[in-house]
Image 1: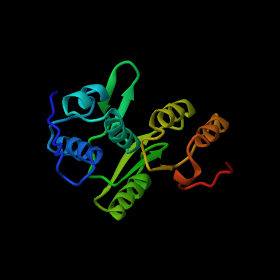
Image 2 (image 1 turned 180 degrees about the vertical axis):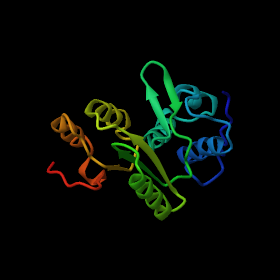
Image 3 (image 1 turned 60 degrees about the horizontal axis):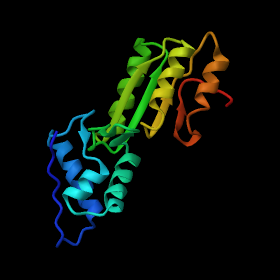
Length: 177
């Protein structure tokens, strides 16, 4: 996908900020989708007569925010298109029940518009839970977990320890981590 970066050399905003704004604008307008490849650091610096450091600084900022991912030997790709969302939460239940539907609805209603909540079910399976957490580490601001496990509870506790403590919220059950 060919995108147009709006880089103005006379503008007072730093060039790396202009790159970030251009990319985010292309995402919000739907010109870029998740998985789309963007120009390499070298391509962008050559095409727009920018230093490699400037482009790299913009890309590092976008990677830190989860908007881009870097795949070694392949390039840079759009990772996240929900850029309007200020907070991302992974909500993990062991199963769906009327009680948990009520918890989910109350949770989402009280968070507001700028919060994205992804709900996943682990079916009390420690292996499913481990894969879910491993694949989502770094993607969310908070991990809200209902840690009900009937088998391999020790494995589930080890998985919970993978989540940074300041990002982990346990619901409905207190565990010693």
